[in-house]
Length: 274
Image (cartoon, rainbow, N blue to C red; front, side):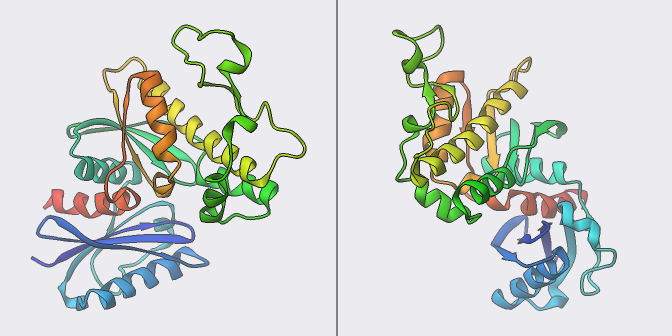
């Protein structure tokens, strides 16, 4: 059996992974100005970096919003497409080893997919994600470089921009500790530092995603959320999501290859059909 290539095609960023003998290997990402350039650049780089002759590629599975731009087989290799929500669930389940969870795919926006064994259901989403972080940072910090914003935020103080429960109440409210957020950016002043603004933007995006995931789980017995996508790599995740765990009595999981779960899931979708 040859290698199956799973490719998550974004508008400008493409993620690719190989699946051989049922195991993902050598994931990588490529950024370009358009999805076609990004896709073919990622495919060529993967083959080159891993010394894989194209004759060994059995099948290519595409997913992601940019997959619609690809009409033909990739380099003549048989090519199929996988629903992005299915790919999200399959990749997250494989990487997290959790069969019953809400998969929180943090891309430009954020989608929520319920995974319960082989049952996969898209249950909704919100228009807050990496695109929100970049847009607000562009307006407020004159940069859309997420790594730069994250580095600034590491030096900021969230209490300088957010209003906490302890700021408005002399004692904890039922179910709400004093350090819980009462209102995002409510304390921000005209002279707020770039570091504090960056901290506020990242906290707003991640807290909103986490809270929405918890609301998506209401009425179900699911208490596990698997975070995937580029935003799951932000160091602030290690601070924000544990605090939400304590507040809502849920568990947030970030798999090892969280950034590549959708590409992994696409490859697994073909393997599962076989």
